[in-house]
Image (tube, rainbow, N blue to C red):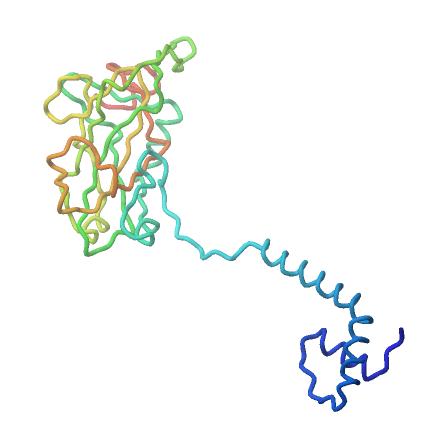
Amino acid sequence: MALSSRAHAFSVEALMGRPSKRKLRDTREEAQLELLEKESGEAEEERWSSAAGRKSEQTEKRPKTEPLATTFSGCGSGSGGCNSFGSLEERDSIQVELQGSELWKRFHDIGTEMIITKAGRRMFPSVRVKIKGLDPGKQYYVAIDVVPVDSKRYRYVYHSSQWMVAGNTDHSCITPRFYVHPDSPCSGETWMRQIISFDRVKLTNNEMDDKGHIILQSMHKYKPRVHVMKQESRVDMSRIQSLPAEGVKTFSFKETEFTTVTAYQNQQVKPTKSQ
């Protein structure tokens, strides 16, 4: 059915959502126009509704823009890496950088070995780090522990100059110890302006050790982990034997993994490391 120009204009205005400015003087004329609009505009209105529905669906599927988050090294590398640690901004801003990483990488490429003794032996290379992103005015503890990389026991094969899996071991009988840096607790400002060294840490295979050394088993692979903890009045780190379940930020580095030995096995390591 063909529409008059007046009816057509009214139909377009109604579909576009624009209110008509003209007033209908005759109620019969208004009813007639509404009938014409209904008959002629039904198909067009259906197309408009369909198009609008598709547009709305595309808008809902479009991913929302997220604000860029500050990244930090080490997070999630070890257990406790994503524990609660103050505000979101504070967690995301903390960075721990391994110092002397080139030396660690050189040893890692040939298979780092660490001597452990009953009396305790210092690590070489030692773990040294630089921390950024702390709150300068808050107090923090910084600590280190050493945890197994896996549950396997290893043996060194001399003819092929490599470490091979010898079997599995249960590490559950040994409770991991952590070493709190002697400068702890200290302000974030102080920590961030110095290189934090754990050169006093000693490794032992004496399971009855009472000197605070880190207890490990020979012929196993381990990795050191660095922990940053905000000082809490309800927690005295000098009196507890294990790390808190919350409020700890943990960092580890692949190149610091090592195999524990009572005597160096790798011929490439022997002339390089000092006794």
